[in-house]
Image (cartoon, rainbow over all chains, first blue to last red; front, side, top):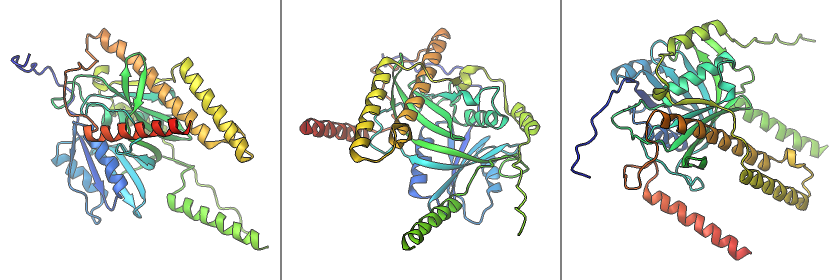
Length: 240
Length: 143
């Protein structure tokens, strides 16, 4: 009944906080994606958007002021390309992803819903196992540290009603969020959706040596120019 | 004739990454992390039926359009199959984690009379419902 006092707080050991932040010129889609993630992370803190002139390294300072040990930074380029940084503050490491195929939670085709602050189960595909390549193991640890909500977090809900899945297809990490309808395995997708294409892993937070780089990565600009060249060739062929 | 430019070797410093990984791991119990590594759950009969149906539908559509591509190369069907894989992976996670949580005496299911802020607002859910409904009605009318 409502007369009962609220349940007493039990031990809350994991005091990880995540800074969710935007930098320079992200589009509305990028902003919506960031907000979607932020609203499902009661352990996240935010700050005003970074100035264009500030170097990314300054994020470390902001995080320290906000008592955060992890950072999720969304960066936009040319008003259409979106990049996501996941980092452990100060000591590193940090990963830079390009974000592709974004669907935000506001879309109407995904029918699921969940508590805003319930703790998600994090499901990784077998490509992330202990025997996988080292950079995938590192990415798994980083993503786990950021997306898991600490147990007994004061703002979290005590039930389990959604699953995040991270799977590797084509050398990219595909992110999905499902609602658990029935505990025997009936699910409905909640959103958002995104594909994270890893570009580089750095030793420090937004700095330091490159520990790993994606050899097959093509920048979105190069991709577009290639596409243009192919199309131009098509016209030439038709003329001849 | 110029020589081909020297191919850049992509950096992959496994030893340093292993050290970083060890540094990051805080040895927290599983309940703090809730991470799982799953292979996709076995294909349930109703899902297999759905996939089969979708495959057939696409095959006839491709034939009608005379697109000249096979089902294996059809992007729409491949998208569908891939989403099914993700879905099954999530299923496997649920089937593993929920009993594990129950074995720790942790309640997982939300009581019906428990109200709290949801990820999507009621207004948004209503929009989704009306859209689904209108889609269904449209299909019925078409039949």
